[in-house]
Each structure stands twice: as structure tokens, then as C-alpha cells.
Image (cartoon, rainbow, N blue to C red; front, side, top):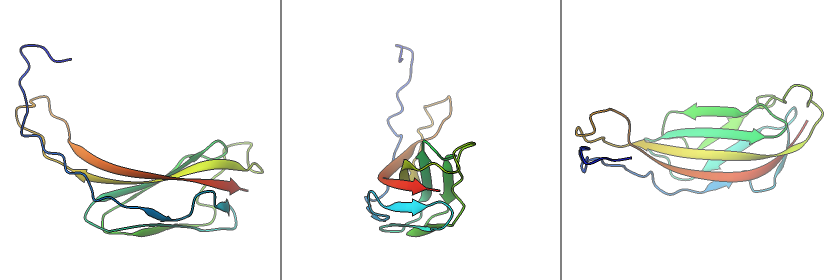
Length: 129
């Protein structure tokens, strides 16, 4: 909450990464955690941070941070792990690709912090043992 004594920081600049689409995997694709690789493919590479996340009810959340100009990543067999007691369970999961680009924080914002623009795309998939 801002008060009357707060200083504006109008020179903060946030740059949004270029729009992109995830072209692989397709929505509702089925994968075996033990037997399949998942080819994650997205558009336009640029010098932006990229994160790939997979979350679901039967798996330990998976995350992979990439450096920049990549346009694909392969999630290898057995890289996505089942939660304890769910080794033989199938579940729906969401695979996300997030691109982030650092912005510039105005010096008037004296408490520090970061300014980051992001674009995120989600794909619903199905994971089997």
C-alpha cells in the first residue's frame, strides 16, 4: 500500500519476452515416465531465461532452468519421478514453458527488488508409470 510519503518510480522498465507457442508436446499427449522421453519444443529463441516445469498429482514437481537461446529441451526417461507410494499411478499433469526477461528498476525504488517480464505457456499432458 502506498502512502503520501512514497516516491514514484516511473523509470522502471519491464520488457516482455516475444510471444511464442509450445508446439510439442501437444495437449492431452500420453507419456510413460519410465519409457518415454518428452520433446518440449517452443518458438523463437532469444537471450531470455527459460524454465520448464511439470506438475501433477502423482509426481514430484519437475523444473529445469535453461540459459537462453534454446528452442527445445528433452525430458529424459525417468527424469520425472513419482511421489512416494504412487509408482504405479497415472495422472494428468501440466507442462509449462516460461520465458523471462530482466527489466530495469528505477533507482527511486530504494527498497531494492527486481523487474521481470514473463510469458508462460501451459500444455496439459497425461503421465503413466
